[in-house]
Image 1 (cartoon, rainbow, N blue to C red):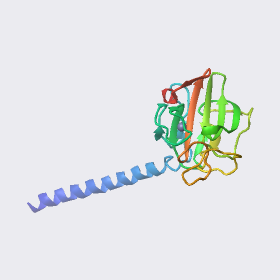
Image 2: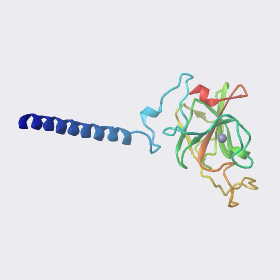
Image 3: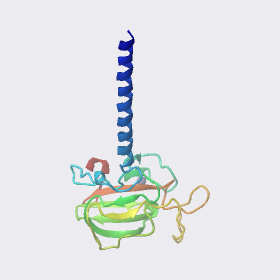
Image 4: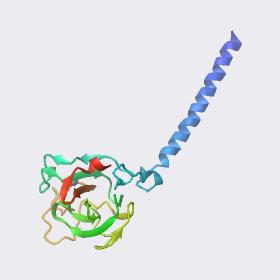
Amino acid sequence: MFFSTFRYLIIIIIIIFFSYIGLIFSLEATTGSSIDGNLTTDDYVISSSGFIWPAPGYNTITSYYGYRNAPTSGAGTFHSGIDIGAPTGSKIVAAFSGTVIFIGFNGPNGYTITISDGYYTANYSHVSPYFLVYEGQNINQGELISTVGPKNVYDVPNNPYKDSAGNPTNGATTGPHLHFSLKIKGSSVNPLNYF
Ligand SMILES: [Zn+2]
């Protein structure tokens, strides 16, 4: 009887030991991913449409494409893109290769970079005011083009967009995020259909 119980005890200890080792390895795997916003090769998954996700490591959609209740004054009831929740400073990469056709403050979209390949045109909005690219620049897919901008910006003349405290904002926005919108030959489409 004693030896039988002892044997089960040993087996249980071995099971606990290997579960613990497995836990350590799974935690390491999590730490090695992109939850801190750093780029890893895992982030460069090309969709069936040939696109790369523009906010590596951040996959939460805080507002979908289509009709909605405007979250803040000045934001449209038709949401022309998707909002990807990500903190200020998160990396933004080009979903597809193309030419920068606009950089600047673009009304409710705030600081915006527009990239087109002649067929697809993408807006990356509420980005950092410190532009890393220039108009006319050719951009490769996956290239770092900007970072998620701050909620408040103070260098826009006559900025009509303000938060509840009266501070000027990066377009019509309630907090840092990437607004990504997509057009095909000038017509707005739901970006999520291309990832
Ligand atoms: Zn948006």
